[in-house]
Length: 134
Image 1 (cartoon, rainbow, N blue to C red):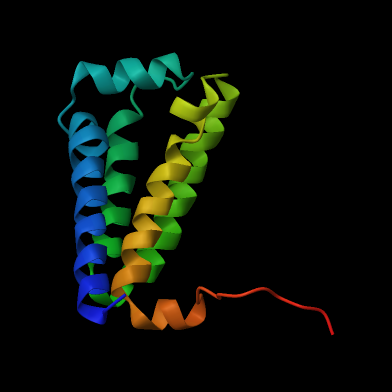
Image 2: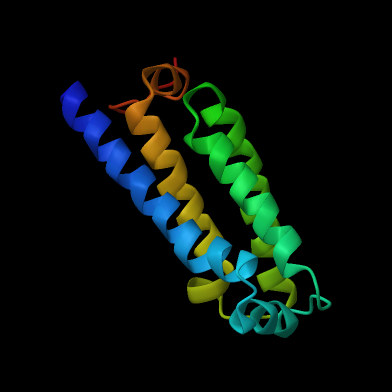
């Protein structure tokens, strides 16, 4: 894939991830929307955690979107998504639509970063061809 195409595809994926996180997760929590507290209550969280989780999410997202801290932000965000996955697992929600949703978001987030960051691609290259033992 051409470098410019990879860069723009990565930016689009990053934009989709950021838009989803802001619109579907962070905003409802920080704006005090009843759906945020209700969803957390269904998952076993005590009342009053929505704003705190929203603040953690927005801090991780800001670090991910800032060029100098993008990898650190991605690592922190993946930790957050792992916690969300554990919560879904503990609540015995459906596997593919709920439990693994954090994994899907993580792949979108890392995919966008990998496509727009040559250093990350060098660290985690896609290797073509069969491996043979010698």
